[in-house]
Amino acid sequence: MLLGFISLLLTVSKKRIANICIPKNVGETFLPCNDPLNDSEEEAKCQEQGKVSLLSRQGVKELQYLMFTLAFFHCLSCVLTFSLGMAKMRRWKSWEAETTTLEYLFSNDPRRFQLIHQTSFARRHLRFWSEHKFLRWPACFVRQFYSSVSKVDYFTLRHGFITAHFSEGSNFDFQKYIKRALEKDFGVVVGISLWIWIFSVLFIFFNAHDFHNYLWLPFIPLLMLLVVGTQLQGIITRMCLDSHNRSQVVRGTFLVRPSDDFFWFGWPKLLLHLMHFILFQNSFQLAFFTWTWYEFGLTSCFHRSTKDIVIRVVMGVLVHILCGYVTLPLYALVTQMGTSMKKAVFPENVVEGLKRWRANARKKIALKSNYISARPSLETASAFGTSPSFSLDPSHSVMFDRVPESDHLAVEMVEDEERENTITREAEMEQQKRGSFGGFDLN
Image (cartoon, rainbow, N blue to C red; front, top):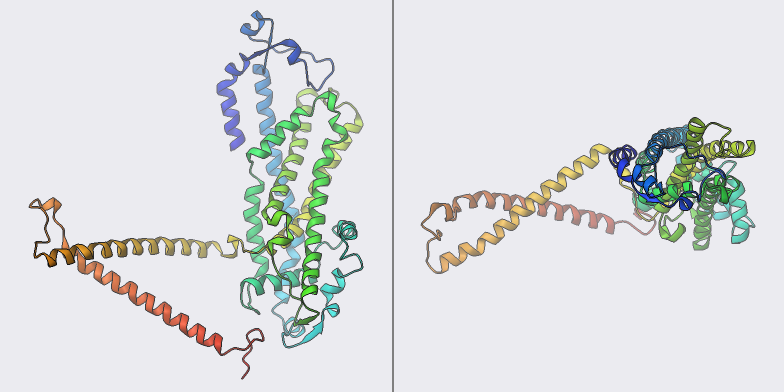
């Protein structure tokens, strides 16, 4: 929609853009070809000055075709990438169902104690290279290509998330929460932002012949994707090291501590923006290749050699496969391990109910404040023995016959507060009855 709006603006202002004149020597710089052929009609204004248009009307038309191609490729690539990731994460549904079985509950009984090295999660992540940063990065880089998300990783991170944000042993459906959070993130990735658009303009700029961009530009999304995948694997290992340094004994199952400190700059959402940038730039390269192929053919100066064509197509397809099948499942699981939960923890019907409750609460608070502000006026009027009406004009008189309604509302709010205080006191008394062993009754 946004690209269509930009295209509409170009259609409206293409005559004004074409009347922007620049010198010929400037117009012949930073072009994709060494010997460009200018077959477009120049504006009479620029021809009289011996100059050329900044962007001719034919150029605006070709640019609109590029925008529509980019919109189509980006939406298509996002849908295919997320569909591939969802297909791999489909088995997580069976893993989530396994957490309700007696076998899982018995093996993770919190009354059982074991050494941390005896757990499957520790055996997977506590290796000789775990505590050395320069060895951990190459190991995590290789690990992302095979068994990037194992069953023990899913169970351990699920247990850490539920313990941090809910009561231990809660039957919270972690798999559905991840699915809802990923759907919210899809709405961000499929969109466009200002800084993404700036990099797209730079991509067109570096497409000039002098930069030889086909040797390095198609590899940027791939390198960034590999770095993000390595970082996500490293976060799981660092969480394991953090728990290992805190205690050598595990009660029940291995417990990791969610925290923003494990992420770059303490900002888990940065990984979402990097994924957005990778997918958009990769889609832009594929769209640019398809657009130049359609407009100018495969033998044009945009495709200097067969090697250029092979590199662009292979890199574009490879990035989408790796992103959907390898990095996206890792991202969906690891980014839930921040300090705070995402809004997707509540289903849509619960979110709507909370919004209605908030609106009703604000309305009640406003009515209560109006009632409290009206009470001093009543007391002042009674003290001086004056009439409640301050004007003979009925339109300016105070209507005190509505006060009982406010009194009734205030009484209801006081009763609600008393009920909430009673519930809070009962919860505190219940908590005092419990010991220090994670909620088990010592009696």
